[in-house]
Amino acid sequence: MSLSSREIVQQIDLQLKLDPQTILQAVARKLGISPQLIEDALRETEGVSFQEYQANRRLEQAFEQLGEFSVAANGPREKTRSKKRIIILKAAVQYRTYSFWMRRSDYSNPCPLVDFSTDGLALLTDHPALPQKRMEMKLRFPGEDKEIAVQGRVVYSVATGITGYRYRVGIEFLPFNKGKKRNTLQALETLTRLEKIHTS
Image (tube, rainbow, N blue to C red; front, top):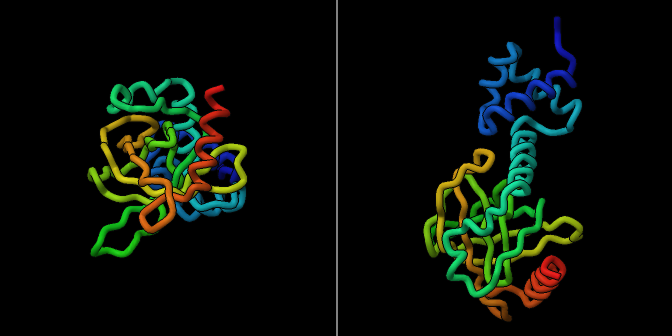
């Protein structure tokens, strides 16, 4: 008996709950169907590829876990911070790193934003980051129309296990001011407003 597209997607969901990082070929083997059939079912029902669907599901599962646990208190630098970090559920960040001798890479898939303040943020990712590495980020907060573009430097990268994301990375923002290698004052205003909303 052949499965409908909707049934295939339900089976994919079950496999992704068991192993959020499973690959397309492994899912196809477990379901006894071709990878192309999986791609076709996802395109028909969700309008996305397997890779996009997997990234979205992992993000949703991470948001659920972040809602159940206050992970902000578990950050490696929590005791030494001058400002308390704020948690906004379903906030996401895309980032890219670059160095002097390499051109900028593409932005990552959306990753969960664990917490933030006007000093910096923590995010979950599959890739470790070296301390002092410079990052460019786009922040998306629920209810906000525009992304916030910010730059920062990596402070720490530690192992984690939230929905298969391997690392928690802490970033300190570059100064907010006019000029190169600076964040805009507009970005600071938006982050300050969000801080006030979520601490009052």
